[in-house]
Image 1 (tube, helix red, strand yellow):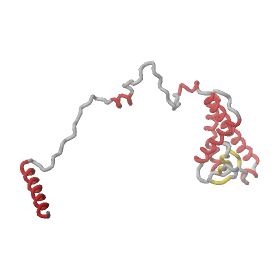
Image 2: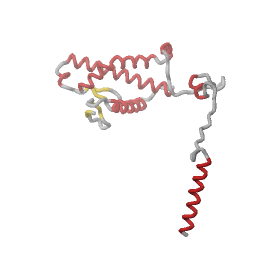
Image 3: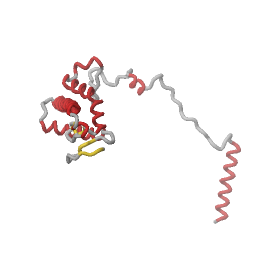
Image 4: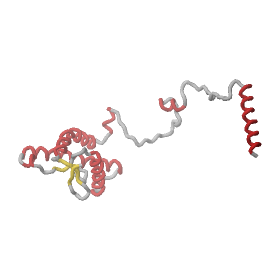
Length: 191
């Protein structure tokens, strides 16, 4: 049996050498098929906007809301004003948070955290509390108007509170290391 196996192997080796000797190479490499297309593919035309898959009477729905500089009059003016207030106060709030005088409460609002520096100086504390009040008023408007625009109905206090708690979770996640945050149980801690 072993002699038969060796004999078969010798035949295969000889056949392989003979076929390589008659062909230019023992390896055959086939080049891939190349298909010529127009200057732009369908995907390229879709990306640059030359290809219309939807007919004229179709509508495209998008979940992303954008607006250009001239479209701001169509946005809720109360919401826009509240965002402007938050933007104006952002540096002050950040500074107070770094000092540990203001923290993110679990309600979605910022809260004053008593500290010696502000307790000893009534003018500084009044200024800080004014910034906190303005920030919280702006957040309250944003919560209420966002819910109103989403539901087309005036939100209940429970809906506003739930929105605030969700916002608080986002703010807690975004808080920098060392800033004060309030947990679900109402305890304050540094992040």
